[in-house]
Length: 386
Figure 1: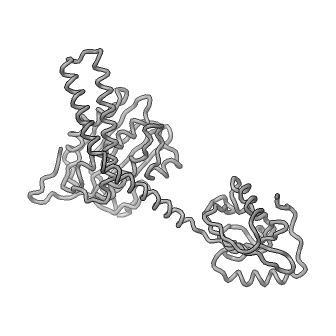
Figure 2: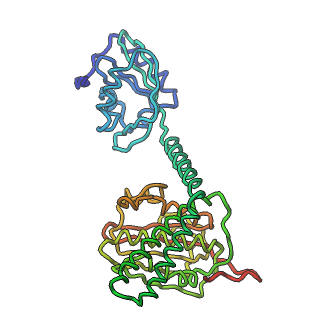
């Protein structure tokens, strides 16, 4: 059922359509009047012109399917052909404006007769924000389920991995670094550390609704103490470089959670460098001015400690970057595509009162910046350094 590209026949009583348009011009939602014989738009109200970006002269005579994106028009045509006469509602369908931008729409349609011509009157509501919030709710529900599962198994699994790592270390000592077993033991330790990092992520998800163990923390010494564990996560082809200012002011956060966040960022960086490269961790003081904009994000003015993890990997394009913090979104190949990483890091940073900023260029690597507000350690509250 291909819409007739020729202009619609002018009805014998054009004043009837004008009267309908005058009525619907007072409606806040976009309204389209569609000829049922040709599926061409014969009238629109002012709200439709504003929503879709056409002039009235451009909109009248346009095939109705043109408000749908090209890939959705075949399905829309089948739906139009199968809809019975009467009144119905379609929800969450994608519509496209004149400039190519898209939005989600609920559409209420009613068949009637105007000036002897059968027409379909469609009222359109932009529900893009509602669809986005519903998607976020579904993701939150998924995380809640994973969190419950994690609480049941992750502790025991992590304890078992600790035994594996300790056993591999003991075997390395007993064999005296014999070449025939040393490389295998390195791979065992590396795999165990990767799985331990995964259980930490799962446990972090399970703790989302629990309070962080917040205290005064100096990030430079904390990362220095964790460096050996971080290096164990990396293959020999990747170098870990540290540039840590030990004298920056303390921040108030959970040291274990921050170690989990950095571990995840280092793991992500390694995955982005399959042929090797360098992961660099910086800790330094950072002042945000009154403009309060950092990396495109609104950050309140003040003194911060910046923890920056940068890699020399493949980088991300704009589409991937826009989804990077979504739970369960991952660019990793199976079986490592849990998609739990940056969402967990984002949650840790947010609950610490900080900000997570992400910069990436395809082929030029990725930089993750954590900004945490500084604090002065209260008497008797010595900053955690390891």
